[in-house]
Length: 141
Image 1 (cartoon, one colour):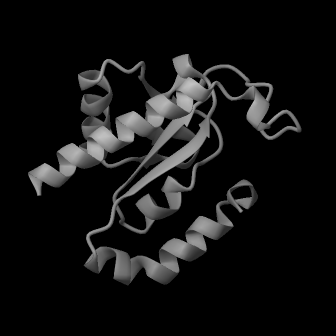
Image 2 (cartoon, one colour):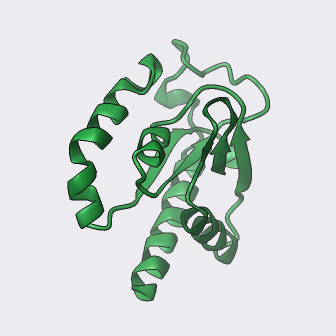
């Protein structure tokens, strides 16, 4: 229920907060990955005032750079991703998107949000960037 005011992620973060904190959990939220040249790490979400965890933001950025994968840094001007609920609960979080954060994407919340409108390489790049981040993070301990 992201589109209905983050109801689902807010309920989940509240219900699982204690357990997630004990487990030292981190959220890497993947939202609307569609275009290779629009894959971006979201460091903040303006409309709700959320700033995402710098260590996660920087670690992901380094992973994408190390692998020479196209990736931008983005600030979302409207709406909110599920990572907002985790950040508000005090849980480390970050979001990766793959649509423009500056221009309207014709697939965003429309009937055009279908698999045929996804550039497969955008998903592959996002996956590789995240896996590289996890591997580096795991080595750091």
